[in-house]
Structure formats: C-alpha cells, structure tokens
Length: 295
Image (cartoon, rainbow, N blue to C red; front, top):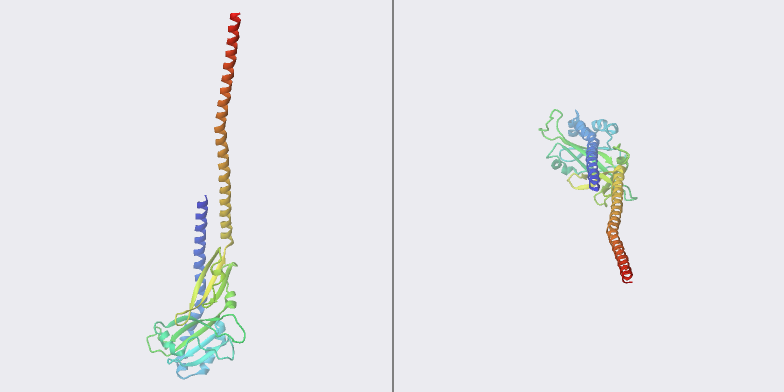
C-alpha cells in the first residue's frame, strides 16, 4: 500500500509539475512577445531610413517618443547608423539623463549578422550613492532595411534597439497563474534563491543572457503546492499506521503461539498425574484384598 501510495503521489506530482511548467513557459513567451513585435513595427516605418541618413531628429522624436513607449510598455529607444554611431535615443527610465545603450555600436554589425532580429538582456547601471535592487533590460533589436524589403536582402541601413525594464517590482506585477506563484530574480554573481531548492516546490528557471550570449541573471518562477505537501503527509501517516498495525499483529501472533505451545504441555502433565493416582489407588485396593484373603 505504501508503494502504491507513493507511485500515485509521484505520478500526480510529475503531471502537475509538467503542466505548470509548460503553462509558465508559454506565459513568459507571451509576456516577451509585445517588445519583439514593437521593434519590428518601428524598424519598418516609412521614413525611418531617410531619418537615419539625414540625422532627422525631428522625425525620430515625433515617432519614437513617450507615447510609443507607453503603448507597448517599453522604456527606451536607441537608433543607430550602419557604422554603429548613435543618431537618436529616448528613454523614460531616468528622464533627462543619458542612458548608455545596452550594447556598443561597434558590435551591432556582428550581432545582427546571423539574424535580422535579436533579443537579449542587459543590466542597468547602479547608483554608487545608495544600494539599489538589481535592474535589467529586456532588449529587442532589429536590423533596418528599406520598408519594401521584407526579406532583408538589400544593404543594411541601420539598427534599432528597444528596451523594457525588468526588475523585482515589474516582475512582481505579472499576472501569474495562481496566488501560490512567486517570481524571483537574481544576478549571475548572487547566491541562489531559496525558491530554487525549497521542498514541496516546483519551479521554472529562465536564464537571461547578454548580447554576447553570456548569462547575467536568472528568472525564477516557483510554486509551493499545499496539495502535494498534504498528500506527502498523508503518505507518512499511512506508513505509521501500517507499522503500528504490523507490530500489533506480530504481538498477537506471538501470544497465540505461546498459548498453543504451553497448553498441551500442561495438559500432558495433568494426565500423567491422573494416571499415577489411579494406579496408586488400584495398588492399595489390591493390597487390602490380599490381606483380607490371608486373614
């Protein structure tokens, strides 16, 4: 019964874990999708190629502005020439400040050589005055070609990067699958989170890599299951019940065997005493009869 209970529990745990992990992976993919669609949309706008070639800041500020960022939940634009020179930037993370691009302009040609679209993460600079929670950017990039070139076969005209802040606060606002779901974020140089090894917990670990492919952080989505924990306790209680029952049965069998062994011995002894007593009475009677005859 213990093995059956454990197999049932293991099957339930594996089924639930696989289903939950698949749902979380799909949710995270859907959460990343809007930024990828956004960069493709703005990188193919009519007028973006002339704006790059003519350094038309007026066109860029009209189309790559706060309204565009808010509509997609993004936080920063970086528009580059083909030589990697930054020709326009706008961000709402720290208005008025110059926010460095998440990758050096000189690396863009090599970064986009394999594919027209690129996605990676970068860590935002931290203040030296006071410690702050680590903050990262999800970055979606697109290689710019003339709008009519859907396949990207014509010469490259520039590059567009769009960033979205991802930190403990923004991740905490994600509408996850249930109230038991927790989201944690740790940088690569930080120790593992408790959720990564807690018992009765299932988890999804998603590694974030920078533009060079090096890991810089890990997103941890975990779920503590009271149902699984309760089933595990139930299995332990069943084991204790079975052990106690086995001990009781063993004691009962011992008593029955002891009683069955000792009773025949006592009965044999009593029978022997009875036979000796009868023989003694018969011997006495015979002696008296012999004495009377002689007399």
